[in-house]
Image (cartoon, rainbow, N blue to C red; front, side, top):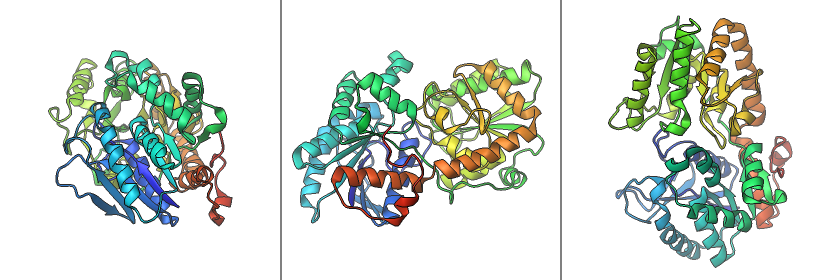
Length: 426
């Protein structure tokens, strides 16, 4: 098949960890890569955010089309909606010039979906949509901090009606689509995110710590991801404070993420706020900010940690818990959204309420006091990740959805071996 992936603000070529660079970038990059490996022709359309970018970039057999829509500078995604008509006009013109038509458009995020609806109206190309985050859910949790206009809700309502398939990334995502958007259950396909075993796999913890220069005798929790308030990193810092002060357990926190390779409060103001919280909690010497790191090194951090912690206010899916599980590291996660789906409570890790540092501290202390339990949870997490959440399985599930909506006869022996979630309606 010939497949167009739209990801207006999240380029597969971007470095993850910045304010608007995270799970969606990783998702689009890996889905595109796996589809190309399966023999499909894959183009990714993303907004040109630097003046020196060529119109077409290439990686691993994939074309990345840097769409001229709005000024060629980096802008917060909340400011991109006015440029989507220009984005759509370019794509329609691009499609019309191609020698062979696209079988399907897969839009990622609501603004990409707006573009996809215009392409479908103009050319009849089937549309698959993955929201990655729902506006009404975001508004519930962020309130006045939500920088998107109310117009987003109308666009999402239209997408739920007009998309040939809406991809839910976890059962909570499907439930929200039905409850908040009146989505038709039979047009929702449940397909999660994944990990790549070539990227993330167990390595010796002592060796990983030696490479990173981490102390061998300390209990270390790792937090990795975008440095924005909704990710709840302040809750993790406070949890470390409670663990040390009230539970008398010496626990350290290493935080990876930000807009620069070195932890810089000017480049990433959130780091300054978090350092202030660490001082207030009396654990400034136990909370370490390590800046942004390339994906090729992340497995060392996951493997070096005793536990991976992530307690966002809400989470449509969350790729980092999968990556930690793939490295055999137990996960303490917020009992929300996709984390509730990926982490099996008391089996592969522990689920705690968001915004509850005491509950997090109790979970940290439990794993610190019982290394055998932590090790068994890590082993169970590795097995769960490998059996349920690989990018190969994700791509195979999406292939089936694409083939159905495009009415393409598609035969591949690998499809008979897909995992239980593959392409099944929610």
